[in-house]
Structures are given as structure tokens and as C-alpha cells.
Image (cartoon, rainbow, N blue to C red; front, side):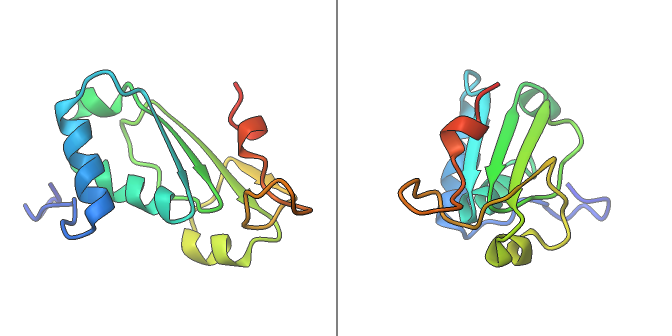
Length: 121
């Protein structure tokens, strides 16, 4: 809830609604991974979760940095230095990692984001 009492989670995005419901009802999920719009889905879906749900989460985002919510266990965010779409979608949120890539995750194309490599601990 916002200080005004208004809900923080915004209903109406099908993907966010589904993820929010899953996270409210499941205790075994520890990692959320999102690319581009998927990162924005995660940002909205975790907005109203209880602290005990958030503290166990690791959030990995690729090609879009989201606002880091207090209480979330860990964020690892990757944004391409040549990714105009990702930079625009990030609305000023800074990633932990700037990588020399553009928006695509198609490893057959030069300068793409290699998610499998970046996501390794």
C-alpha cells in the first residue's frame, strides 16, 4: 500500500496479474527472470507482496532496468550499452551491470545479450 492507502500493484496487465497471484500463493519461488517487458511485469507483480515473500526473491532483469523495491533479497540487472529500447524502458533506473550489447537475446546475431552466461552466479 502507498502511504495514501492506495494499492501499489496495478491490476489489468494479464501477465502481472498472473505472476502476482502465483507469488502470493507459492512459497517455493526464489528467482524471477525477465527480459524487456518481462522485467516490467516483474516490477508491477511484486509491488504489493508481503515482506516475507520479497526477502527470499532474487530478481534478474535483462534489457530493461526496473526500480529496486526495498525488501527484495537481491537484484541483478543487465542493460545493454547499445540498447536504446531498453534504456528508454528503464525510465532512469540504473542497472548493476552495463554490458556491450543491444536489445536482442538471439545469440546468432552479433552484440546480443547472452542471458545464459550473464545469469550464472
